[in-house]
Length: 125
Length: 125
DNA sequence: TCAAGTTTTGACAACCATTTTCGTTTTCGC
DNA sequence: GCGAAAACGAAAATGGTTGTCAAAACTTGA
Ligand SMILES: [Zn+2]
Ligand SMILES: [Zn+2]
Ligand SMILES: [Zn+2]
Ligand SMILES: [Zn+2]
Image 1 (tube, chains in turn yellow, purple, orange, blue):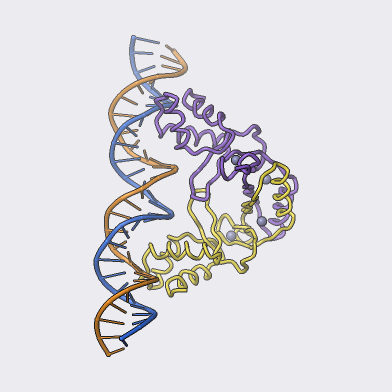
Image 2 (image 1 turned 60 degrees about the vertical axis):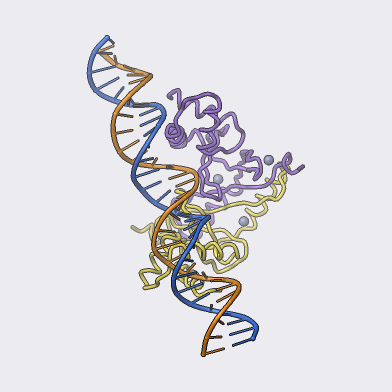
C-alpha cells in the first residue's frame, strides 16, 4: 500500500461518517498535503475495489466512502445531518432478500440496504 | 398534466424496467417526437416530486425512473441484465429498519432497500 | 553508486449527466 | 383576438469523475 493511499485511508478513518472524494481532498490539503485530486480518486477506487472501504451514493449521485470496522457484509444507519454512520447487521433482512429473489426466479441475488435518520445528537437541535 | 409530461410518463410506462432520462429522450425522438432533452428532465423531476414515478441511482450514479403500479411504499427486485423490475413489499424489512433506528436513538428514520439479481429469462442465456 | 526501467503522481483536459439561462412558442382566461 | 403566464427547447454552464501524459519517485541489477 503506497504512502498516498495510506494517507487517504487514514483521512477517511479520522471520520465516523461517509465522506466524498472532494471532502477528503480538502481535508488532506488543509493538513498540508500536496496530494492531487486525481490521486485521491485513484486511491478510493483501489480501496473500494479491495474491499477496504465501503461506498454508496447520495441522493444527488455523489459517491461517498467510509472506512468500516469490519470487512464482513453489513449495512449502515446514517445520520442525515452530520453523516455519522453506525454499522448494522441483520440476519432478518439477509434472509428476506434471498427469499424474495428466489420466489421470483432470480439468480445471483444481492441487495442494497441503507437506513437514514437524524442521530440522537443532531435530534436535540 | 401537460401533453409533454404525459408523453414522458407514457414512454416510461411502456417499459417494465427502470429507464434513464437519456434513454427516454432517445425513445421519444425515435418515435418522431420533437421533445427536448431539457423537457424530459423537467417532466421526470415533476413526476418524481408528485410521487408518480420512482427514482433510484445506478452504481454509476445515473438516475433511473420507473412508473410503478402502486403509489404505496414499496421496493424493487431489479434484473441486472435487462433492468426489468418487480415491485415487492415486506412488512418484515419495514419493521426491522424502524427498530434499528429506534435502538440507536435516531429519529425520522427512512430507508432505501433494493434487491438485484438476474431474472429467470436472462438467467437462461 | 549509477543508469535504466517501472510505478506513482498530479496538472490539465475531456466526459457526461444534469441544471441554468433565456429567447420563443403555446396555453388559458377574458 | 389579446396579453399574461406557463411550457419549451437549444445552447451554455456546472460539477463530479475519468483520461492523458510528462515529470517525479522508487526499484533493480550491474
Ligand atoms: Zn448526526
Ligand atoms: Zn445485507
Ligand atoms: Zn432480465
Ligand atoms: Zn420500505
